[in-house]
Each structure stands twice: as structure tokens, then as C-alpha cells.
Length: 219
Image (tube, rainbow, N blue to C red; front, side):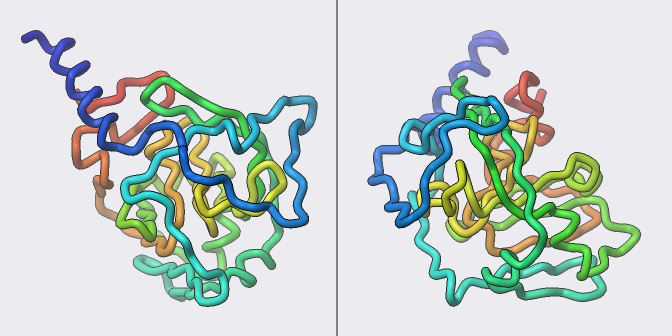
């Protein structure tokens, strides 16, 4: 069996168990919020047509008891409530989410810049890596410079409606130009570190850089 064939078979197996599949769960009720269909002249993919991924199915987090823990190489660890996160200045941008399976969708994401969120915690000078932990046991990481230099946001709205539970409420990382397995959902903890970290799928062979258009697997 050649290397190409092995890689294809590995992709099929991993995709089958990754949850990188069509979302068949009931779409959340948006209440009084109206979903946007277009932003700055760009057509948005309706949430009902967005494919989804998860390792343990949809997580349901109570916003009243939710806390986002910021820890690691910071001078001031934090435990932020949902309302405290909403109080930060917000930003919106249209970003495509691309899955290694080959599908993608376009959405308007609204949230807080990563650098704004951690500013009060005062990151140590020797920090290089940021780990995101999710309520379902998922984790992934990014270079600190990538998050800071590219205005990466943690979104709490999609297409102008509050993130549905199925889409990652209360927070989804909008990891621009990275494959979907780098877009952590249901984020409960952010750890700043100076050591390399391999997340859930990266430790199973997926490429840690995850650049869209690049190789799906480590070589």
C-alpha cells in the first residue's frame, strides 16, 4: 500500500468518527433575533444549511453559570461570566469555515477579539502557545502570534443571532484560514503556555498548522 493510499484510507476513517458531518439535530429557536442573509454584499450560508462537527454531540451550557477560565502564563488569571464577555467591545467579520472533508460555508461572526479578551490578564513575555478547551472534552491550540496578529475573534453570534447550542454556544473560535478542527466550540478554558501542544485531532495525525489548502495530515 503506497503512502497516498494510506493517507486516503486514514482520512476516511478519521472523518467517519470525527463528527465532521451534516448536522441532523434540531436547529435552535432564535427567539426574537433575525438571522442575516447578507453582510457587506456577501451572501451568507443559512445556519440550517451549515454542516457541523463535534466529538460528543451538541453541548448545552447554561449562560448564567458559565465561566470562561483564563489561566497559565498570565499575571492575572480570570473567570469571566457570559455577561462580562458581552461587555467587551465587539467586532464582526465574514469568514469561511472550511472542513478537511471538503465542504465549507460562509458566515458573519460577531464576538470579541482574542487580544482584547486576554488583555486584562497580562500575558507573560515568554508565552508562545494558546490552548482552547471545550465542554465536550475537545481541545486544540494556536500560536499566540497567529491569534494576536490576525485579529482572531471568539464569536458569540453567527449571522446576527446568538450562537445556537449546536454551533458552539457560548463561544466559538473563528480560526481564519485554518481548517475546521481548529475552530474550537463550547470553549470553557483558555490556557496560555510556552510549550507545544497537540489537540484532540492533532494528536491523532491531523496537521497541527491546519492551513486551508495545506496537507490534512502530518508528513
